[in-house]
Image (cartoon, rainbow over all chains, first blue to last red; front, side, top):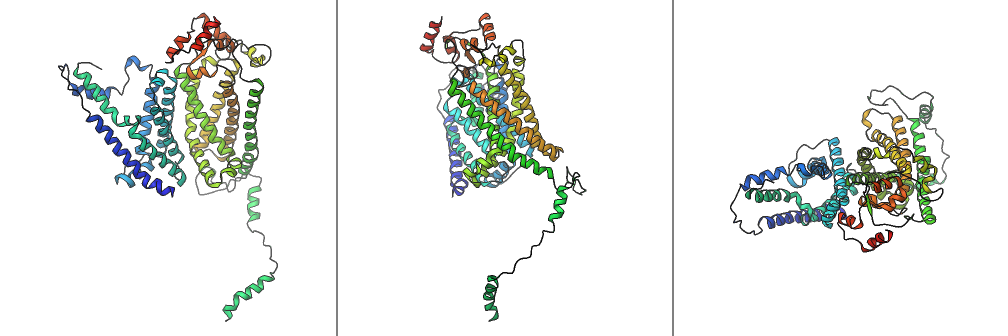
Length: 213
Length: 337
C-alpha cells in the first residue's frame, strides 16, 4: 500500500510540484518588471555579467581568510552532492529507467563513498558555521535550517539504503527525496537555479556603471 | 480398491510406530575433528585469497561468544552505569555555580573555527556511538522491542551509516589535533589540579590554565583512543587489503572497547560541559565565557585575560552577538563592580 503510494502517485506529484514550481519561480524572476536604466553606460554589461559568474567562484583576497570554512566546506558539499546525484550507480539506473531513457557510466563504488563523505562533512561544517558565526546566525532564516536538515536527511537515508538490499530503506530514501522535491521550489534550495542569473545580473549592473566588482 | 485402502492401512501402521533406529550423522565426527585438531587448520585450496585454505575457523566461535556474552553485556552495563552515576551526581551535587555569579563581562575563549571543529567531531562521534550501540546491543535490547522487521531495517541502516561516517571521525580527529594540541600540552601546575581531584577535594576550585588537567587528559584520550578506534575501524571496513580473520577479530575487540571507553567518559564530559557547571556551555556555544567563570575554573588563564585587558563589557558582547543588551545582566555587572 505505502510502497505503491511512494513509488507511484507521490513520486509523480512531487516531480510535478518541483518542475512547475521551479519554472514558475524562475519565470517570475526573469519576467519581473524593472525600471529602465536611463543612465549613460560607462562599461559593457554583457562581458561583466559573464566575468562575475565565474569570478565569484573564487573568494576575494581581502576576505578569504575569514571565509575559509564556508568556501572549503561549500566546495566539498556541492561537488560531493553533484557527484552523488548524477554519477552514483543507483541514481544513473533510476534516471535512465524512469526519466531520461538513456544512461551514462556511473562512478565506481569507492568514488561514491568518497563523494558521500565529502558531501556529509561539508554539509555538517557549513551548517555549524551558520550556527556558530554571529553574523551568519543573524542572517539565517528557518528556511535555511530546514533546507540544510532536509538535504542532510535525504543524503543520510540514501547512505542507509546503500546496499539496495532492503525495500524499506529504499522507500524511506525515496520518500525523503519526494519531500525534498516538494520543498525545493519554495525555499533557499532554489539557489541551485538562481545563483548563475543572480551573479550575472549583479555583474551586468556593476559593469554598466563601470564598477570592477 | 487396493489403492483406496492404502491411506487407512498407513493410518493403522501409524498407530503403532516401530522404534526408530538412531543413525549417527556420518559427517559429524569428521567435522568435529577438523574443528578440534591442534594444528592451525590451514589446508590447500585452488581458491586464491586470504585464508582460503582454512576449512573451519574454530577461533571465530570464541570471538563470537566473547562478543555476545562479555563485550555486549559489560559494554551495556558500563553505558548504563555512567548515566546512573551522572544522574546521581547531579541529584547530590546539583549544578556547580560560579562564585560571585555571572558578571556579564565576557572574554573570548574559542574562535568560530575551533567551535566548528569541536561540534563536527561531536556530531560525528554521537552518530557513530548511536549506530555502534545499535549494532552491539541491538539484538538483546531492541529486537524484542521492535520485532524482526523493524530491527533488521535499523541494524542494516546503522551498519551502512557507521561504515560511511567512520572515516569522517578520523578527519575530524585530525582537525581537532591541529586546532587544540598546543594548548593541551601538560605544564607545571596541572598536577595540583589532579591532587585536588579537580576541586572535589578540599575547599574552592582547583587551579587551572586555559585547559585544566582533566580537560587535557580528556583531549589526549580522544586523540589517542580515537586514533586506535579509527585505525581499527578502517581495518574492519576495508577487508580487501589482505588482513586475515585474526586481525579482523582483534580489531573488532579493540575498536569496541576503545569506543566504549570514549563513550562512557564523553557522558561525563557532556555533563560537565552543559548542565553540570554554570557558564561552561557558553564557551562552545558563543565562543565567549563569563570572566567570573574563567577566574573560578581556569584561574591562571583568567589572570592572563585581566593582565592583557581582554575582557569586554556586556554591551560589547551583546553587540558582537547581534543581541540587544540584557538589562538584568548589565545590572548584575554594575553590582559586581
